[in-house]
Length: 356
Ligand code: KG4
Ligand code: ZN
Image (cartoon, rainbow, N blue to C red; front, side, top):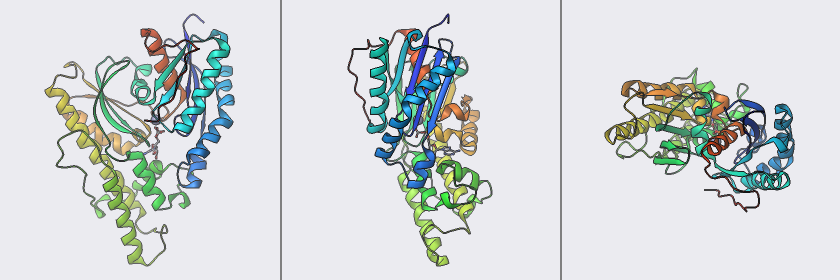
């Protein structure tokens, strides 16, 4: 291997991921173990269950990524691992494994911020110069930030309560979509996207949150509560048990997806105007990067694209596989840091994880 090689390890939530990348961003080997099906059955992520599954799979996942790449631990230039933010119990498994690994093989260690990794993944796929605007939407986070450098982010807005993916998952659970014949293996967000295709969103006109707030923050809990109340009312009208609504699930899914999309689009519009007023983006081909698990939703992508087209921004959205959690994005962040010599630790340094 002529270029430097980085092993990336991700365990911040419910995916155990590992990947080996070279300095150009070529993926030499990767492996991913997703816990989605387990958490669908228990009706949400139970942190101790997630931790146990990471513990059971981490060694195999890392070994698989190495084997597929044909790279030996001794040939690595560094190991990069997510240390924040995420579930403490989950982060701990990846970190503990990594610290042991770098000490055994005497390799530099690069602690990674999960959201920064999401934001920078696009640069692995195509040349995107700093600064650019980024909208990250997942099960744990929603934020708008200007990426100004590998370790320099200006936060413009974040969710004041829950993340959009979390809201979608909760609505899906309230509708018991895991029992729906078409949705039994799908995450809440995917299930809602699928059902929304045959739904009439106009039947339930939910109000977009925070219309009077002139900032770039998000709020989804109130909207989710409205949706839940509507489901309850509908069940009562039909005199049926909780979670057995069938008559209008498609319409509720469509209205839910639409109102989440509208809220995201309006806040993004505000952020773009703010960036323009303050000269935060280059005048030549300013860019919005859209990523995170919820960004794989085609309806939401379309809503955001309407905003970027109207404001003259280029919209970049990595393929779904790179929008959700994986080891590749962590390894890539390691590559970017290695290139700039930023945040690289010797193996003996004790690192702790930070859930927030
Ligand atoms: O980024 P991610 O894999 O994990 C983190 O939360 O960090 O995102 C997972 C979230 C879940 O809430 C899931 O319901 C949502 O992304 N999601 C979607 C879609 N696919 C996954 N939401 C809307 N539409 C989708 N197609
Ligand atoms: Zn994520």
